Length: 407
Image 1 (cartoon, rainbow, N blue to C red):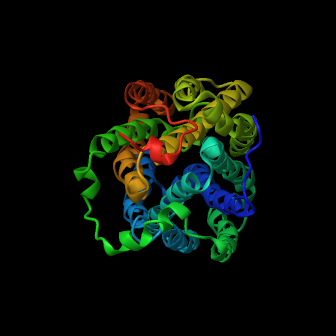
Image 2: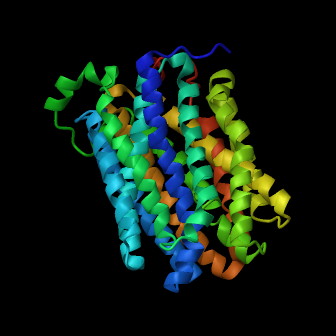
């Protein structure tokens, strides 16, 4: 396949958006890495730990408010707000005095972080050429895994510092401030600019999109997102809990396994964008959903270090690849004037219900059945999601957004 021909601005834009998506991976892995230590410091049970994850995850639902504003205020303006908001609450997390402070600051931080991630995908879909849109979206999501690798690699050292788990968040604030400065060179997307003046004069009611012919597609995509999140939101965040309590790993072994697994997954993760464009969205969906279902189970049932690490690497690949796939479908199946609103409804508002309830259910189930069995059971949800994709979603590969958005 010929290399994508990006303009100089598109190249700069890609770097900027890559940094933004990097922190979604960093923040997600940070929580999973510090959770056992944090629970021990605060004297919390497994169920309480799962509840904290669920409350924090609920912030991703409220990010809906920010994302849908991008169809009125513009992609650039709202993205700037999300960057600054996430930077503030990341710093405040490091200053938390107790479990309540930590949960509240992380909850607020997630609102801005997930809105930032969602808008990065919308901007990428609108600014990069159709024949390489899957490549761009896939590569951006792949950078997410770099955030996970960096976090997994440095957390053991940071936990040993005088500030302990707080250092994880203090370190993360530095690149965020650089990103806030760099956002000055970001332009509004051409597609949004074409109708921005008219759009800003209109007041779109909260339920406006549900009164359009796209209502059915909104609910279809939301259900697919929710089922997918039921699995992907637990496979990494609770893996350290499983590895320590059931596989007998030490903190150092967990860090080593997570780092190695992430590195092993990288070639596959960075190939997902090309695969989306070469194979198409639907065929690629069959591959990565099947990989997810199989290796999530293995990552929570095996105990041998190397077998477990290899299984985890494929589970990580699948979790990230699934996001890239659904990002492509979601941004391609709705028109420009409601693209951000549609992403907000399908992912942030409705789809994230699965994201929020899965840690609660798994955390409570783990108290009776253990982490391994509890997380393994979530693999059923991705199998159902795949069936719905093949039943409901059309192929969108290589088509302009104006064509893919048609009903």
